[in-house]
Image 1 (tube, rainbow, N blue to C red):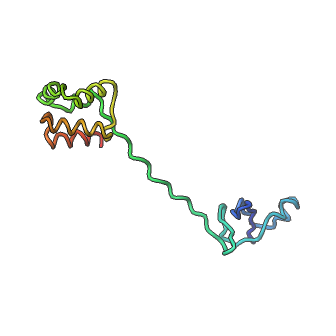
Image 2 (image 1 turned 120 degrees about the vertical axis):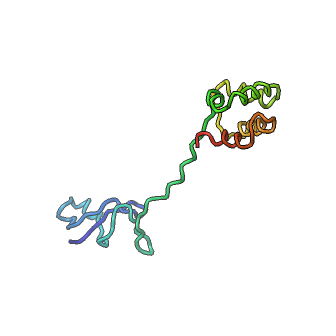
Image 3 (image 1 turned 90 degrees about the horizontal axis):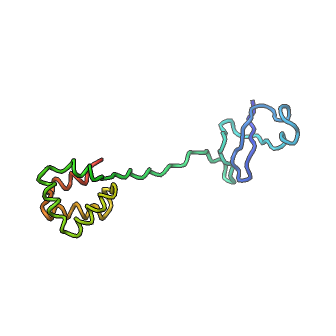
Amino acid sequence: MTKYARFHSDGRVIETFVGDPKVSFCPEIAKEFIKVPDDTEKQDKKTTKGWEKYSLPELPEPPAPKRFLAERDLKSFMTRPERLAFKAAASDPIIEDFAETLAAGPLVITDDETVEAIDKLQSLKVLTAVRATQLKALGE
């Protein structure tokens, strides 16, 4: 049987029909159908150069999920000596701000200020380089 299609104004196929549209539709609708190749599907597009097969658009990669650090997570992560060193380092303005901000709610681990504070903990010898890296990787 012959395949017919109706089109959007931009040339995309609205619907296809196999058979004689004059038999199955009222004259006003039947005249909208045009004979098309048998492999024509919805959303294919008729252009001046021929047929473009429809393909799903590529979806963008979803953003990486944000990883959060809560005060309880930091305290659970740190050993007792690290926690004591953290309290002693609270006189440093960056560490003081970090502690206050963390007390107010979870922070995004990858945010610049959080990374800066973790690096500061390392430079103050509260955390070793390995432990600082482990802290930055929490939730991965």
